[in-house]
Image (cartoon, rainbow, N blue to C red; front, side, top):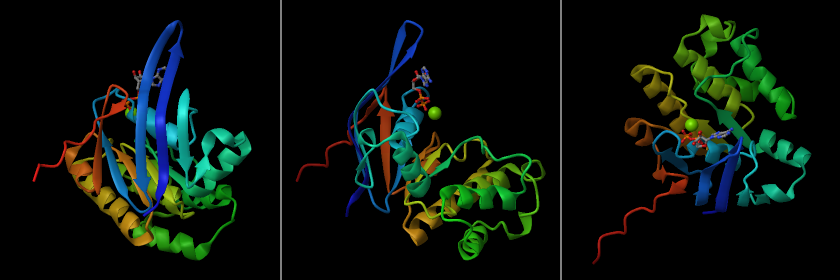
Length: 229
Ligand SMILES: Nc1ncnc2c1ncn2[C@@H]1O[C@H](COP(=O)(O)OP(=O)(O)O)[C@@H](O)[C@H]1O
Ligand SMILES: [Mg+2]
């Protein structure tokens, strides 16, 4: 097994006015290729910050992030953007779909942005996997929350990123839609081997993961030592 996302002694201090907010205080994490990791912890403990730093959206104050062997701090902004587009798919709690585009447009545009152009086969596989065949001509406002999140997931995974980072993907969904979305994320992880890092508040959602990482006050809690003997 090989680590596809790795961070060492990661610190992130936000400066809001004269106040320093230490959001990450020495985080070490290694996620193996194909692993599904859930990150849990109370509101404000640094979960979103960690995900955005790992995904190259926010620079850390100090510490090292390796994504598929690339040291983010040693890359130019342009190279980091390319790495992000090619290797990482993001899913957010607020679906962040473009309101004027149909589901089809929202998913297709992601393939164009990714840089390799539109791949009809890949598009069809993704849409079928997420059960969106009959919803493609609808705009986000004409879709249920669960359907919108499935479109957002399709958009994130259509270009086959190695890594999917999801920030409370079921946070705005009822339990039935949450279950459907989680099953699909798990299926993508299993069938396409995508590495999945998912933040959640919900223990039922976290139970889908191979491993649960708990955070408190900008740190990862060490798992309890295995029983002796
Ligand atoms: N852009 C920002 N500027 C200043 N403080 C921030 C910013 N983003 C987050 N924080 C603070 O950093 C801490 C961690 O936030 P966050 O990573 O969003 O936590 P979580 O996702 O676990 O709720 C919180 O105290 C939050 O208020
Ligand atoms: Mg958050």
